[in-house]
Image 1 (tube, helix red, strand yellow):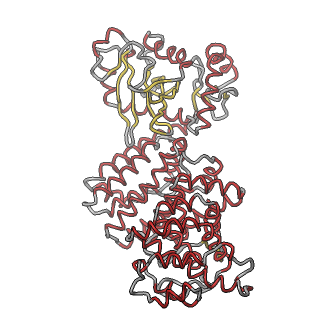
Image 2 (cartoon, one colour; image 1 turned 90 degrees about the vertical axis):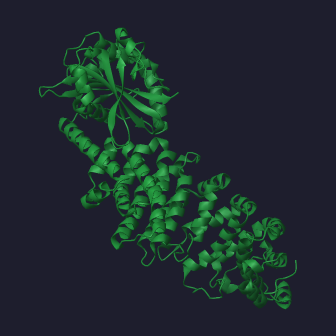
Image 3 (cartoon, helix red, strand yellow; image 1 turned 60 degrees about the vertical axis):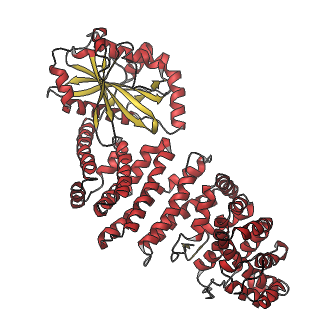
Length: 639
């Protein structure tokens, strides 16, 4: 291919001969549209690993000095070459193989320049201030980013190259004046953030990076993880950074975090390092800061608002990627201000931005799913929501009903929470316990941790009657659930049981059941399903065969009704059948007083595949309201 008319043959000849000044001039004149295979060959000619000096920049003597002066502009030319591949497929096919062949050489020179360079040059010819540590690193990182974006084969070769992984780790954790490297002024994401994000999005690259970090030791691992969070803080709190640029940087940071903490990442130690940083709270706080500033100055540009909402939506995807920690992740997001942030965004979104509003509502729904867990509810109740902002959102046609439902259900949850705190009890798992309430210093089974008692006497009595058969099975199940971080705590069980009682007391359908003379009350078990913003009676179990004609009207058959759960779900804890049977069939057969009711409730645990299924015994109190006094919980898995 003949050289471009923009670059003279004389300059090409001088550069090919190794004249450092000509190479610099070629770098300055070479734009993506000017790149030819001749320029590619010139650039690669002087990037050889055997020419990398062994001493620092200021101690270079010839020939090392000449090698350095040639390599520097050649490395910079690779940036224009990588960008040229997008519009010049013929050049890409010719240039990619030799670039891949010399990838080790490129990495060796870049690593040297990261350590010793003092004055690179931008494409427009302006010099970088030697004191500007950010620019020194980012100018070189831009080369890598442009090459990786230019061709999938180069990307594959980079992310699977140990030398490149070492470069990536070094550039990510290095700092100057206690600040990490971030280039704020780019219209796109900082090239270092972009390079790491691209690497971890690649399955092989993610594992290479994790293995590289593991080989470096725990201090480097922790430094790498903390560098993610510190960059988010730097971006948000740096003065003069426009909002859309800050959001673009956060998009990159959240994207790489999502990949690093996903189920595909095998290193639990690495995931725990992220948890230690409280990364979800930190990201939520950063986004809340941006939305607060956007709302304060009255930004109405759709692109900025859409970008903030979509970045928030991507952050919430981590809730489902870490299934076992979903409830705790939800609590961390709320603590960082995610609920305030979402309500604030909905208050400033224009009415025609329905897609962005729907993403924000989806995030609210995800928060709502785990709102009933005490640890998450505590985060909700500890925050002060913006009454005026909430009122403004409630008036909107799309988001208003959602926010109203969330606020209404929060009021119910707060009432249950206050009542539970006043009583200060959990449940004794001995079904014949006369007390049925235990304080926080209760007696837990040391074998399986799945049952809890008010006294040693109750524990012994239940062991002889039921738990000696259950314990070994329950121990294995508890170990599996704890390993997968999907363990249903005694505290959550007690709160959910009281919530079910609260719902039953205020449910119009349950009141109809109480006065309907056509039904025997102890032959019917209401089943409550908790959704993202409310609870409702999802179905009824009919325990009497005489009522089998009602099947098909939203009820369950009498056969095995006392054990069966929702359609397409199954209970693997078959060792609990005697305990559940004793409670439900005893209720059906009239072995309890007329002041007793049995109801059931379904709450999500961890992810969409698993639910906690509670069978609750309630006793009518002197006030006429029912209170939960005993509860059996099972895990319901999707069949």
